[in-house]
Amino acid sequence: MKLGVNIDHIAVLREARRINDPDPLQALGICARAGADQITIHLREDRRHIHDEDAAAILRHSPLPVNLECAVSEEIIDFVCRHRPLRATIVPEKREEVTTEGGLAVTGESTRLAEVIRRLHAAEVEVSLFIDPHPDAVLAAKELGADWIEFHTGHYANLHAMLYSNLRHTHHSIPALELPRKELNERLSEELAQIERLADHAHGLHLRVAAGHGLNYQNVAPIAKIRTVEELNIGQSIIARSVFVGLDAAIREMKSLL
Ligand code: PXP
Image (tube, rainbow, N blue to C red; front, side, top):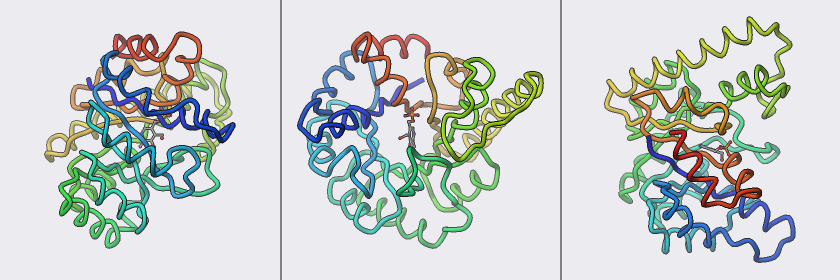
């Protein structure tokens, strides 16, 4: 299982003071030495954490492949085509959201997405679509010609948190479920089984499969066991842990769980 470390939150900390410290660029060597397999960053339209100069410098200096998350936006896709990361992961983006709240509406936006995928492929950038674990989304991703899909594990993470961390919600799109533990447990098992079933199905369609969002040291193991998922992209929990133990140790701990 490969680990993509999402380093956006280093820039979140920097932006809290709008200065130049901590610099996400400094994470690259640490990530590589600690055993990460990929650097993941999200260049948001509102530039609330990673800026163009960060993304350009990370792409120039990263010893690891870079997965650049981006919205379907003319300006951002132009940037991606100019800077040519190994992979672009297309994600939905809303200005008011705290983080990416759900998967892409692949079935409703197919003409626009097809055009973006064609442009990225022409620039020799692999394309991944960040989708909810839903059969229609997998089929649509295949039909659109994506190379990868990344399953949004936010719902899985929410259910896990409600059961084991007493947390009511981890992001806004999924309302807190006031359900008895037995039912929460069943829903968690169903969500996991659905991700596994669809990962196998996607693999059978020759799509490469990643997963991410809300994964942490407590909930990652069952997802990491799914053989047809090749890679997990994890940000918040690793950067949060690094505040206490350092980035190197936080990545090594996560790698050992994978
Ligand atoms: N994968 C994608 C496509 C994402 O948008 C994000 C969040 O930026 C992640 C993975 C990482 O999520 P988290 O920060 O919850 O680990």
